[in-house]
Length: 328
Image 1 (cartoon, rainbow, N blue to C red):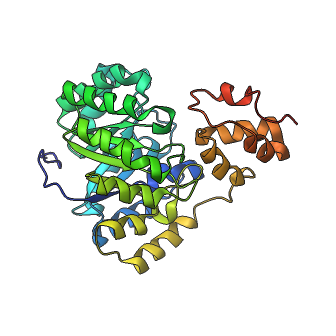
Image 2: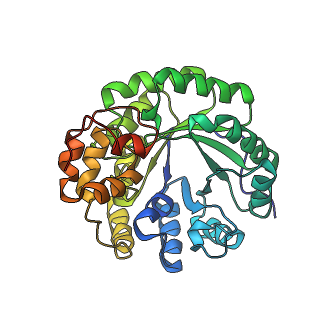
Image 3: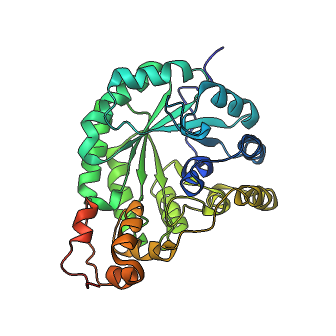
């Protein structure tokens, strides 16, 4: 069977759906097979060009969209029709050989793999990207938690990725939902000037700026932005898929709304600390740190966050030990 992916595509603004992958944080990726199939089928029919299935792993104890086994990717490709199949790989401590081994059985049924990358891990992830390139799968290097770094640091990283020549796409992810529109244009312009390939943006909506930031990215010459049904995603949620699609063309809102209802039936109630996510965005914290703040401060967590300083935090310990914040 020939690989589904192609090397060169015309440059035009496009949308990548992340509902199953990022929305999976809300329900521990426990989507039914029927919902996965209906989701990918509908998105293919309404013209969403990229559908992300989940994370790649060979751990048999994980949920299907946390493994992205070849059979699942093949089924998604058939259901999605013209849409391209995408999966994410957290490189972590994996060697290039381990990355190659994960991709080998998936290469014919996977169009794009996205590698998550903190700037501190760039050399390690570039080595993994070289293994992806050798597999023939389109490689996206996703720089995450962009507000943890200065714009110049990100532009410098983009230049390094360009020089390495092992990535096809470069993404910026506002993982903390802390990027303000008045700062976004400078960031995007610097990265766009340093990176000649396809560029993408993944927004979170903690502060209500995900759509605005996505628009600014497209105006800065970015090629791709992410969205999810009803904005489902980690913490403060993602850019709403319908609104993302509206940035680049027509939207079949009734069909997307109907599909969102189906996905909503498989989502649990929000956690007791859901109200903290706008404040974690204002203070530039990782979404995953909200439960730690809640555990440490309980009902006083909101007051604690309001008194916290805005910093480019790298570790949750910096937050919990911040002397500027009020104590319970």
